[in-house]
Image (cartoon, rainbow, N blue to C red; front, side, top):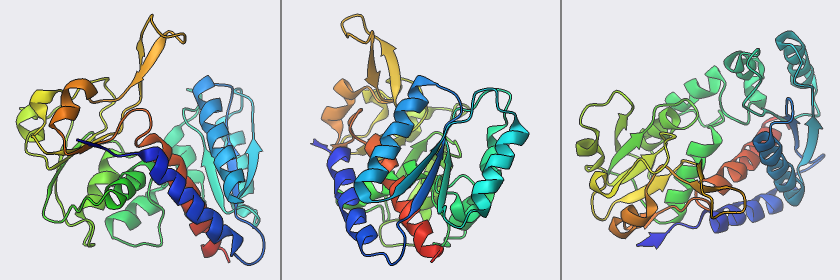
Amino acid sequence: MELIDGNKIAADIIAELKTQVAALPGRPPCLALVRVGEDPASVSYVKKKETASASIGITSRMILPPVTITQEELFALIDGLNADPAVDGILVQSPLPKHINEVAVFRRIAAGKDVDGFHTMNLGKLAQEDDTGFVACTPAGIMELLQRSGVSLAGKHVVVLGRSLIVGKPAALLALQRKPWANATVTVCHSQTANLPALTRQADVLIAAIGKPEFVTADMVKPGAVVIDVGVNRVADATKKSGYRLTGDVHFPTVSPLCSKITPVPGGVGPMTVAMLMQNTVKARRQHT
């Protein structure tokens, strides 16, 4: 069994991007980070994105509206960033307060500045294999992990566990693409899938993105499979100072001995999400030149 080291691969990408940004003519790329309220997880995630930006040479513009902001006020803020030629990418950190429609907010961001890859136009471009669009960061990171770990999907059976617009659906579309590193046969499973273990056991590559801690057990995995664990779940643990431990959607102790390769949690897919956000921001800057 080989661990796929997301920390190292992400660091390699960050180093490559730093070189690319240094070679760009004119101003550096600019990423606007919008964080509504003081949700602790959101504070942590946005800080990581700000730190990564600084390490590459990307200018980050932090915008911190209060949790009481109305949807129309947030729309006006986004409209201003859309119109600002000095801003290349816009990220609105989720979750948003319950009185704000997240999907409507993501659609408000101009498609050419949607470095999170959630806009309807970018999802459409992904389906059409149009590389001018932006791919959601987590599934893009999964594909980078596989490529840089020497895993070719051509002719393989990829089973995606989860059908979200953030991970499951884009990951399935990426694996299906007519590209040398893709060309997979893809099955998408979800909460209504019948006889789920029988399907996941067919996977040469299993992508677990269902959001349930340690859901995937040894009886669901074919020996020799590659397992990509997208989940990040907090599970109560009195032995930890924090009172919890982080675990993925895969029961790592029993599944990992079966695998040819597997991502750990933490240190697998997570660091790649930030790295791909940076890559999308650099791409946006090039497109705005």
